[in-house]
Length: 224
Image (cartoon, rainbow, N blue to C red; front, top):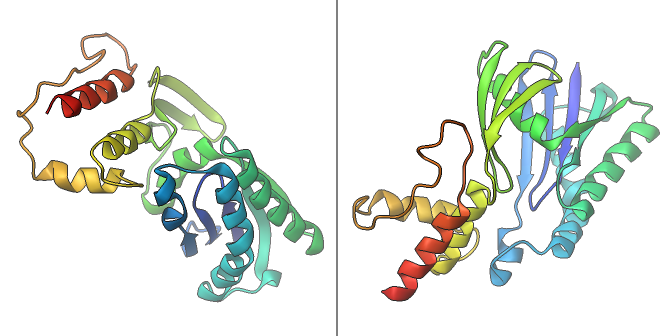
């Protein structure tokens, strides 16, 4: 059975086709880095417009790359949240239209649940397992017992790690998205050059905090 999935919760438009044996037949991603870089962050309205402009083309490319026809698709899925409402509506509308026109069942998918279970597409991971979920908007530890059985063990109390990466990169003038660039130059740096705070490191839990670290980097940069 072939399944089509649509993701448009933030600034990437992605459509993938997988089969019931967990094989990824195609995974087409259209990024918006060039659109948002001048604003040093994601502009939700521009993101939604970009999803509208490219989603049909990406859909056709996903079918072509997987050597599939719409008649072979047996289920349509799309991210329903959390995410930017404009982008979510584009993906959901496209997916629901496909399902209605082709008389296919539709499943709305939680963005974080997708993160949690995607690892099982490429690795033979059995339930239960522990998960560290790190993205632009989330940084959490989960105990994954089974499908629909997820337990939040702890996570960030303020900024997500991905957000902290991008904000620090912006402070350093690395542009947007700056996280990958920051990672590259960090590998060449001296880890002992500055003594930045390590929030909550002595707490007996799995809570995280990155806002203070972001502020400390900003203050140190301004002092140089």
